[in-house]
Length: 333
Ligand SMILES: *Cc1c(COP(=O)(O)O)cnc(C)c1O
Picture: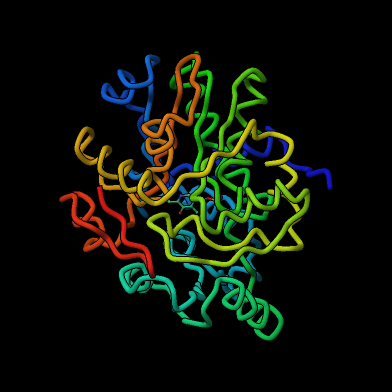
């Protein structure tokens, strides 16, 4: 299905989110540039007020609500970063927010959402079940759903990253973007390729439970089984009734690469050791892909470092080079 999102929507989002989301720094990584043999830049979405890029999409979607919808409130289902983003943006606008989270989501992320003033409902063992609760609240209480990725305003908000990177580094050849539902990658690819059609956009996911990759391979949205991963913010499905992000990713991503947990572990460790960055596994996949040798870069590259809201205990283990237990799998350096 053709999507109606355009570069003008992304430019409009840039104005709409000003004052809620920040324009994040693009910094050069010497260690990764040396490894790659080309300049490598890091787009630090870790500097957003909520610690992740999702504030961009949420702020854009909320900015467009009318007074009635604001009064009835907003609701979302999220593995944490989208919930934080909706809670934060809603608090700024005085809109009541409810966040539905699966029981797989870490306690650390739940507390962070509650601290922002949102009501948290814990439901089910998957994001799909949390999504069903959202549908009930929309139907029974007239709340407005702010979806985590498959919504034109959300996609346009995430796309503002693409505009910023091309202004900050006009000679960038490749953008490397973490992929879960595809709002981030789809929005960035739409924006970046509108400005410079020669820019390549490479998606990166973990090799277990990568719904967009499996869907692109199948030619239509498919379900995957959720498993524990260092990249937990990349878990969850893309929705069997996906309307926008599957089409965007199919048309605009040059390829999607998959990484095992050991590679993601090394990516997180590298960004901490060489850049002093605290990152989620899902945010370190660009660095991880580069270190694993799966990116053939032919010019300056920008890696989207998407968030820093990692479980502190897990992060400290990774930073110290200690093994981490993920379900049945033990991962170490
Ligand atoms: C949500 C999220 C992603 C993936 O974004 P999608 O739009 O769902 O593909 C990547 N990194 C972090 C930190 C996230 O919170």
